[in-house]
Image (tube, helix red, strand yellow):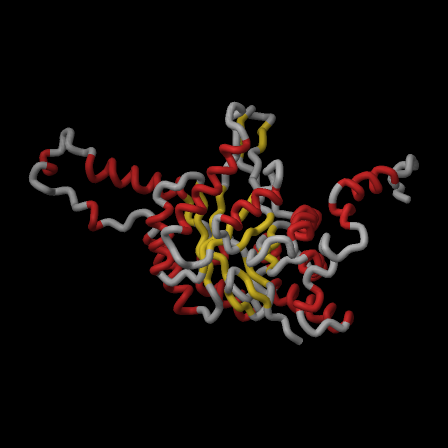
Length: 338
């Protein structure tokens, strides 16, 4: 049985690729993921805000303490170059993963502006990253900012990095664009090697006791994967040389199979691994193999895209027709669908 797939130009032994999560901070956990069958690892994200905060803190410590400290004039304070700041720990983790694993390691950058990412992208490439995932986490809260400006932000970041590094670049996108397909097409034209659909924006919650905002983290559910399934099915086969990764809500073998049938090249696991452990990657992989044997498929390529918009008799079902059919199917009997 041939489970191989190609993703971002990389030859992978199967389509199971754990997405960016705290698990990748541990070499031991990554080894367990590899042993369970993971075909590649996407590292936890290096955040633009964290780098800026670390740099600003170190700058205040080293360069802004000349008031009230006589030792400063005598050179008591150490040099900036003597300190490890910014992405150095991330780079060290990347090097250790490359030494320990036999599967590709994909680095991840999370930010909203082009500044600084060229430098970090080059460092990640030099440290051995096999590819780079760019996670542009941007909430367009300025109501005067048109959508075209938001889209150009993504394109500019990709364009800048593409001109600076040679490793493949994957864009992890949110579903918030007014025309997802056109946005993906624009990114492909600028040189993106792949897209991952879709990023999950973590929403703040309101504490009704103290009337304050508080962070809120809810693991994904299988139902969330249906959004990625729709858009991957629509995009499959329509943009040359662009890898399609499915992310968000993939917990079970059934979830993964649906996304592969829609046309995904790989499926990304996260919440299910955090909940069930690294071995869950093997559970999903074994479930795919069992289903393939039952259906008589000898390779992943045999069934990828079998239920895409290009393959189904009524592709409009991926658009508005399915919405209309579901509404019409509702029965007025409470809790009954017909």
